[in-house]
Image (cartoon, rainbow, N blue to C red; front, side, top):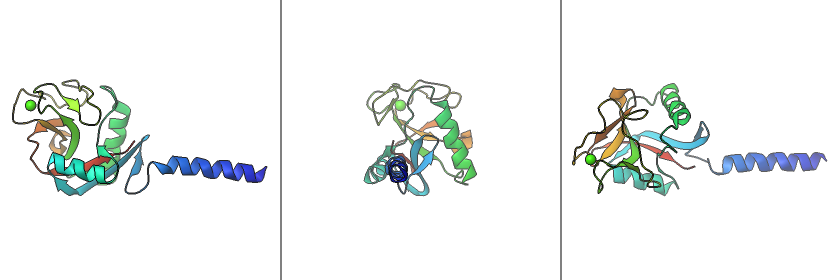
Length: 154
Ligand SMILES: [Ca+2]
């Protein structure tokens, strides 16, 4: 009986940790890797995320506010709050229609993620960042700008 209990416990630990091993950490119920010193263009940072088996961060719906809040809390509590970070969100090739790179899901304009006035109809600013100067609301920038990495695995 004790052996069965131990086996069950170790399997539970294993399955909980399996998808969120280093360099990823649990943030809320998600697996996230944040590295303010890993910088590059949007596609460079996306490649970095893929090397680790993840993708540029995405949210699961237009109202994934619990995760958004957990993420911002994590950024602030770990003093990671001096850099802008890429979102995996673009309107490149379909101007003014913003989608997640991960799954092609549409992203709603305006709140809760975009800062006031964003996104615009710009045809040169086609990628989104979590902008430190906007309290980590989203802003659109050129995809060739240099920003930091947040990757998500699950
Ligand atoms: Ca655009």
